[in-house]
Image (cartoon, rainbow, N blue to C red):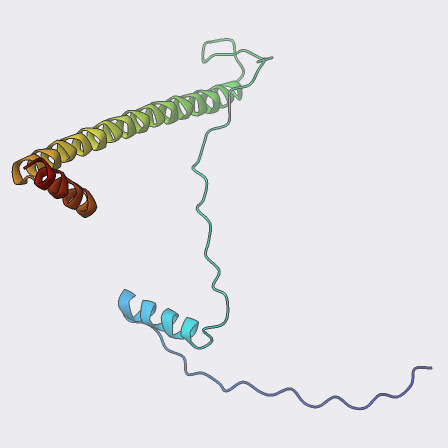
Length: 149
């Protein structure tokens, strides 16, 4: 026994947009930018960086230790092969992470070395030109030399 309500006004229809198939990556990028700029107030979703893939850690306790030797059933070899592949994958991942860490450390050392060289050159040029690092120190040094004379 609901009370009769007033009829809703019809929804405004969107204008049909022509279908545009991008022929290059630049054209696809242009179309995306145009779509974003139609409504500049609308927030743009920025996807977060995906986490790097990491292998599953090895099991704490292995109940059924098996190998590819004789005596195993015909299906056991495939289980063994899968475990072996996963272990090799884990070891490759650890090697890649160690290499990445080594390269990062080398890069940081190189940055520090370049920074020290740049500081030394800057200090040498300052000494050579007789300039002090800040203008107000230059004025103060000039006043002190004038007082001493």
